[in-house]
Amino acid sequence: MYKFLVRPLFFLMSPEFAHYFAMGLLHFVHFFPPTRWLLKKIQKPNNPSEPIHLFGLTFKNRVGLAAGFDKDARWLNSMNDLGFGCIEIGTLTPKGQTGNPKPRLFRLKNEQALINRMGFNNKGVHSAIERLKNRPKDLIIGGNIGKNTDTPLEHAIEDYLYCFKQLHPYVDYITVNVSCPNVGSLKELSSIHFLKQLLPVVIEKNNSIDSPKPILLKISPELSNIELDDVISLSTELGIHGIIATNTRTDRACLTTPADTLSKIGAGGISGQPIYQKTKETVAYIHQKTKGALPIIAVGGVFCQKDARELLIAGASLIQIYTGFIYKGPSLVKDLAIQFDL
Image 1 (cartoon, rainbow, N blue to C red):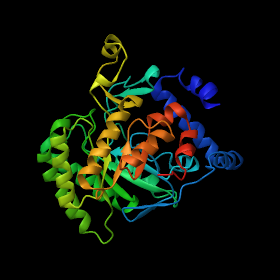
Image 2 (tube, helix red, strand yellow):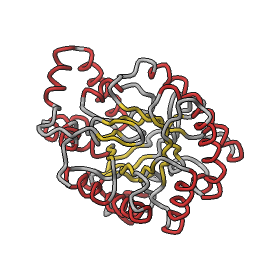
Image 3 (cartoon, one colour):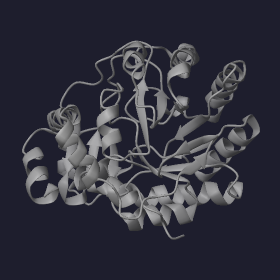
């Protein structure tokens, strides 16, 4: 039904409008008890996953919603109804910001991909906190944090630390995002030099709190093996709890869309099927280098059970989806929330 009726309707709309329209429908379903009951029944897997224990947390299944989809924690209850085991909100910044000018989200339908240059549009960390006060109790929620676009690099750590302190009481883990290609200073933010300044400050603050939370690092797919080695070494040394691999990709060599079409779209990060192979390679590399000691959440191009199973075999502990969810619909959550035979 989604593939032949619902998705064609959504794809008549602009991608960003369709996103909010679809979420509005799900929001209605949640607050109308009969439809909510029916949706949860439909979404129940035939062979549900056993709970996953990771970072000292218990995930009801391996399927998470990647950051960027529910930036402001608006749809936690609706996503919980669909059967997600984890929702990562954000990226959140200290102050709300509008992001880049529209249009800033584009479909590559033939490649089952998206290109986005959203630019960390969000209402700010305090807006999200007001919603998190009424969060679902049976859902793991991560908070993805970054810096405001207009914050100079020399004050970036202050932004990260501010978001960390504000979000800490309301989420189950915190992701330090230094990997988004749609904000300025990406190269500097993802550099080992900056990470050596940022991560110790965040970890020190976390350890000073009575109930420290798991700290994860979201990395760019553009890192070379040498840069990955540096990140792995630093993460291990500092006691980072896990790596999220990876974010959207700017290198368009993975696309078959004509160059003139891509030129008209302009800048932005690629997500979806074309980046799956890079995701798998990165997960496998980190897993091999750390001998499985550093947990990995894999995100990027997951569209089916085969994709998820391959990533789990490569070394991932959890899976996050975004673009696959848009193209495949809610059934993808049900398909992935199963007990995999590994």
